[in-house]
Amino acid sequence: MPSLFLLPHLLQHSRIYSSRQALNRRLSATSHTQVWRVSSGRRTTGSHILPERQRKRLCASPIASTSPASANPGTSYNEHKPKTPPPDLPSLLLDSRIVYIGMPLVPAVTELIVSELLYLQYADQKKPCYIYINSTGCTRADGEVVGFETEATAIYDTMKYIGNEIYTVGTGVAVGQACVLLSAGDKGKRFMTPHATAMLHQPRVPSTGERQATELNIKWHETLAQKKTLLNVLSKTTGHSVEKLDKDMRRPLYMTAADAIQYGVADKIVTRDSKAIADVLSASAWDSAAGLVQKSI
Image (tube, rainbow, N blue to C red; front, side):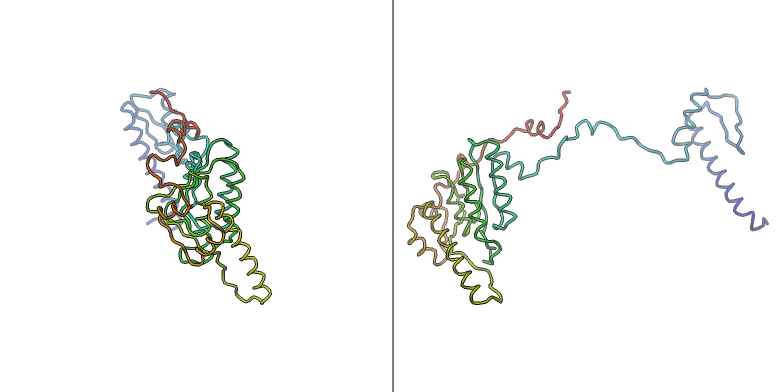
């Protein structure tokens, strides 16, 4: 029986022998004319000897290499790799000059809408802008206040500032300040989908919390000023007097598409033939803008 201190050496020689045997089998299967054998660190030759260049190539292959094999990526993907990231959905809509308001009017949404309107004016001052609205205004669906009334006035002022024609399309719901934006489109270019709903209501105040009486009085005056601003804007867009609007908005005023047209919030019900979207780029134009190169076959 071998002594214990020789056991590691025996295991090491056993692993080396097994590796050499596996190498011999792989090399023998590669070429029937090759009879190289690796034994005890010596090379022995048989009746046929491979050329020196072929032997070096076989020995340098990943089969005979002790280092991990590395694969070089092909160039087929890189040839068609976009030079820029593919466009996201808001970018696709913006290419058609569509601005979509699909969330309550909170500061982040207002920032995006105002930025898109300013960009569309910068891109082309003569082409119209299309604003699709499906929003509950500055409140959630349950009526909880989530944004300031000034979010709507910021978008409204930008719509009037840029000078482009503004098409508005109400789809889903347009509640409160979102309804004001719907009515702020150019006359004759305010649309609603057949089953959309519009609703007007007074400005709502969030929970006051632990405030002093003086602060409550200041907030009341601010809310009253915002209400007057809202009524003045609606008076311009709908043609009704401030007194009538004030009376109608004492309680929530729900309107179907037909009711909104009659009230002056919208002008038409959108149909398939309605001009409510700009021309869209073709597939080849999008590929070219994204840096995709189409090879001819």
